[in-house]
Length: 384
Ligand code: NAD
Ligand code: MG
Image 1 (tube, rainbow, N blue to C red):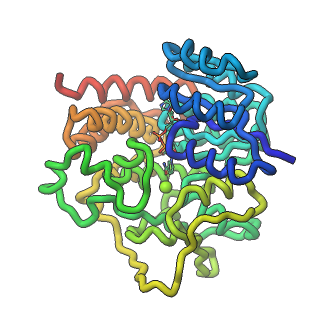
Image 2 (image 1 turned 120 degrees about the horizontal axis):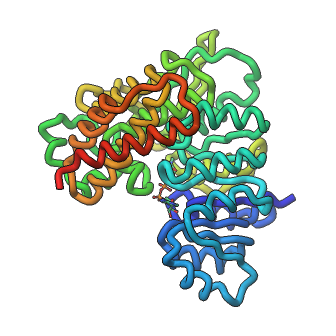
């Protein structure tokens, strides 16, 4: 049986790699929904190549161009942000790959779960914003949430066959990003283009900046808490600059399982699509005969303070991770437009976390309000 895949965010780094996996296995997967924000050219190209049932262009000014280009096909074209939420509720697909970046991916993902679709989750922000609500809904609807993030995929793979065996702790590995070993006197002058050069992974702009500030690892700790029902004390981060061990699980007998391989997102993407099976791939293999050393060190949280802010939010819980995420999205957006410096990202997140009122057990609406409030406050901190 062919699995019908909806790629929310098909024009992004994860979206494009998902299409490569689908193209390599046409007997197993078909792309039925493709969505993009503003890149109508690539969306059209992808639609003509994969012939999905539906495409959505979130930026409605681009609707005519997409409609016109696909007028000789049977592909249905929708536009606008609300169309993303509506298409997520439709029955034309079996599995959503949630590959929109940031908070914009939250509602479509929740809608996919609401209607019982399997979710392959790349969009970690969804769990950072309201992980309790998302996972509760997935449990209620008996929907598997399969991680795509490489660290979480690694942990997920280590847990296969472990049933109810107790996890003592997990170790999330981090490459350390392009500024590993640098100090604040260096970071204060870092510019956008330098921060966009990641040593091991080629990814979208937002996650690349998050990797340079280590916020990405903080968001991943929060993501791991919800995916694997962990306490904050069970989640450890270690810098592993070679990015060969993608993460590890230590069980209560002290045994540690690790998942390894060359850094290539197509592997966790393919695993999420084919789970519980493994299927063949031609991805490059790690070669133990080539000289290499695998090293581990503790993260420098005094320099990369975003990680310690995220850990504060993880321990505090409630709406704090949501507030942290919103402020960070605004700050990274401003940094990418050269409006603020690299270290200002941390200052904006910290000030916003101090300002927004704490809510211990937020409802969905309270999460949405906290997100909006935090965004407005963070934006007000940027000097015009
Ligand atoms: P990207 O910027 O390359 O792509 C983002 C996609 O989302 C694009 O298709 C874009 O059109 C769409 N999008 C952006 N804003 C939107 C909006 N407001 N409304 C609707 N659509 C919108 O990002 P990416 O690197 O592919 O990352 C996607 C998600 O996957 C992120 O949450 C990221 O943290 C996560 N992730 C990415 C990688 C990676 O290697 N790229 C690894 C792990 C996790
Ligand atoms: Mg990751």
